[in-house]
Length: 624
Image (tube, rainbow, N blue to C red; front, side):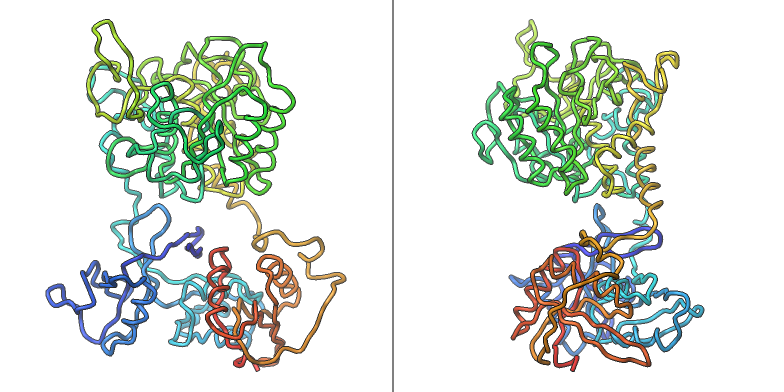
């Protein structure tokens, strides 16, 4: 369960640690004299807390922390969090910075503070204050989210602490990363006497540094292909919703040497940063393996519907045909278009196809679809890979073999290439780089590389549509080759240029930051968004008993309408509004659900948190 918080000009998505907590105690916790409920100490002073690992047995961390908070020597206990894609611990200090709207007076500001039992610490100016939670407050991360729902508040940011030495991006330490020249090209192959062109790469590591992480676990990359080794160390940990198109099961075919292609393709896009082997372009992404390529229109419809219906953000396809006799029919064109236009809740799935390896002046017929990103191949010397098909439909090119191959995962049942000696070889120079990997290439490799870049783009700005992702890729690509080959910025060999992940991520971030204001979570029915118009009410007197989940206190009646419509539709629960006067102002406190016991209300609170809506349990008797 993740919680989003403001952190300066950015936003952090935090997940709770399963075993670390922060404790403030009456006496110093010493490493050689740990209490019996503490297994080990990680940080002695992080945000004023000792960060420790609890001996929780079979208890979950919530219950164990509640138990420890009741110990006499424990003054305060807090959860510890991790930011998405990071392993550094984050501790909320308990303080919050609150920027009130201009024009609010101190009475109105105090009203907001009292609603969440906050203690005023300091006033920087008339509208910016520092406050602290009290024992009666919800946790500070939740309070910050609740405050931002109040019309009197411009923004609220919880104070957090994290080890300074880990602020900088730490590059993955997988042992074959330096062999992956397509991610960052140093100008040579580290274990072979072979020169490359320095910087002829996709700028992946630069993009990771700009993002401050290696992608997002909220982004799912589907790879439609044949032969996924789901036990491979660089595939097995990120798998979600595998599918076999042929038998409509969740069990892609394993151990068949006929099918091996999907394993290296997938690894180029999403191989995780797990300390060993290779790393994909977006190693934090989820991986949806879809086994079963097919010319059948019904199978094509099935595969794309499955991806779109099951949460795929990106769909990578390194297959197709260049035979003019097998052009896409209306059903296939529509299946691709439906996913590209209607997937991702209307933003569209980002669909990529390899242009093919036949050295033709026209591309794979699937990649010619107008909603597809058509990917060609360039080499480690920033040259056109001679096998890569050409055409006006090419969007971008990406590094692959043609001078020196890509290092990728191989299926355990992959028999490799049979040479005249009778040996089975997996590496161009015969030098063994591990049983799990092999040299790979073609547009089959360049396509999932760009799919990984698209995953980084969506990690930077998840609100982009599929069409906008394609625009970002094309606008930020580097022009390589002879400038005369480009007409109006486009080349039939290179498309709009060789993909540049760093520039693409920068553009995605720029577009995110350029958006003025934010809409409420979820869609709002026509006319509700302004809080003005004609509405139907069903007003009943509510007894002051029972439990619900309070989401905020509002001074703006229009905001009450917006939130009530959205929450009632989203959670199918009663909405209770408490109307009161506080220091001369009308205040609307909104509670979702009415239950006769706290446990039922807690179930709704968890459901709301999973949907990204922050609230806290409220006894309705307290509102009377």
